[in-house]
Amino acid sequence: GLRDNGVMIEYQLPLTSKRLDFILTGVDHTSREHAIIVELKQWEKTKRGDGDALLTFLGGGERPVLHPSIQVGHYQMYLSDSHTAFHEGNSPIRLGACSFLHNYQEELGDPLFDSSFDVWLHKYPIFTMGKTDGLCEHLYAYTGRGKGTAILAKIEAGRYAASKKLMDHVADVIEGEPSYVLLDEQLVVFERVLALSKRVGERGKGVLIIKGGPGTGKSVIAIN
Image (cartoon, rainbow, N blue to C red; front, side, top):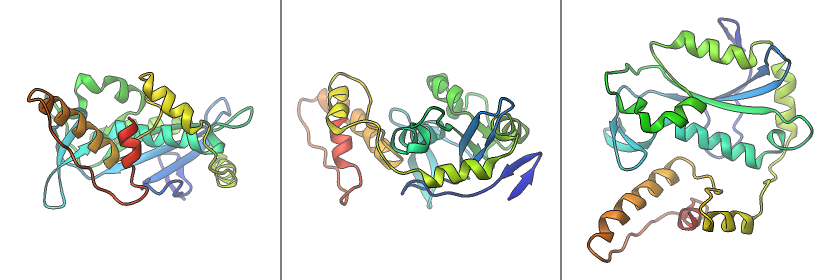
């Protein structure tokens, strides 16, 4: 474990096929069990992209990426819905999420903190290089009273068992409820589909082709 300002990072646990940087487990001052997903980013600055997407420099060029609060928030929603440790029993583990952009310096009018993201930022906060104390305080408030190993054991003993059925999801989507959780590139593509559809709609007709191997989320994007 790594101890920093009283916070114990006990284990790195790959709960999904998507990359999670780490999950911190522990109890708060009321002895309530918590797990917090912490998404790490090496970004230095961003620009606004289509929809809720941002643009940042990755892999030698400027690329569309998810807002960190939306990305880690969808991890949280996915696990809450699909992993029994977070939705079964009389007292399931409370799952939270945040992001740490350790190379990021905020600027006036920074798109990362645009008011359009306020709801996401409030629920899934972002901490930049100048807010490390705030990150430690946030983690300590939920997990700083220890007992993280026992909570981790409960998570490892859990299983994947979705709390909703396929047709329930489809029905909710038809009614306008976002039941299917899109992750990472799926949500980037979804936002691009919406933006391009609006532009194409003004001209009449158009075709948009989405490619991807089995299990990459093409059907989920289509349903949404």
